[in-house]
Amino acid sequence: MSMDFGEGKYTAAETARGRDFPGLRQFCVFLENRVGHLNELLRCLEKDTLRVIGLSVIDSIDSATVRIIVSEVDRGRERLELGNFMFTETDVVGIELPEGDSPLRSICSALMQAELNIHYAYPLLYRRQGRNGLAVHVDDIDLALEVLSKNNFPIITEDQLREDDEFFG
Image (cartoon, rainbow, N blue to C red; front, top):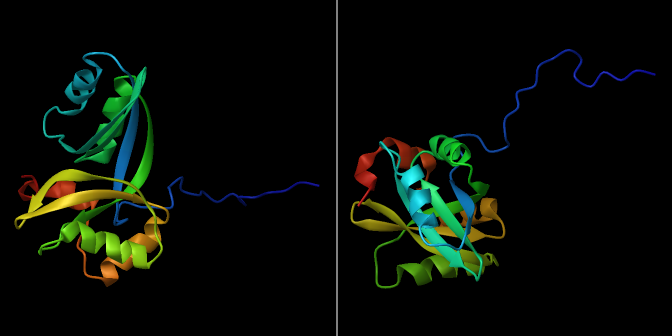
């Protein structure tokens, strides 16, 4: 018995999240904990018009994990591959901080009401109309995007980072 799964039709090899997905792609780069390795990573990435938008370093005795967001994901991935860096990719939510006395608390409150855990967060080198940005990794990114949008928190997208230099501080 023969099975023909594709029935001769071409299926595009795309991910579930297309380019219009309202989140940010983060690279987690694994480095030896040695002097100069972070500098090498940044030298590899920050060339021409590619910019580092977010950076977080988690240090241990013999290694470091660098979470990094760049202005153009595909170019960043290409440079990491060409530089022979070991890395993974994950989605995070980019949020413009709202006006007011306690912008971080208001974001945390909205996510808490939806019973979403924040695994980690770090600031983004992002500035639009006087507002800063925050990258947040949560349990359920789709639910977080829904909750934040419903509560009128502006979401930062990859397209915004790629297309508009006014976003950089």
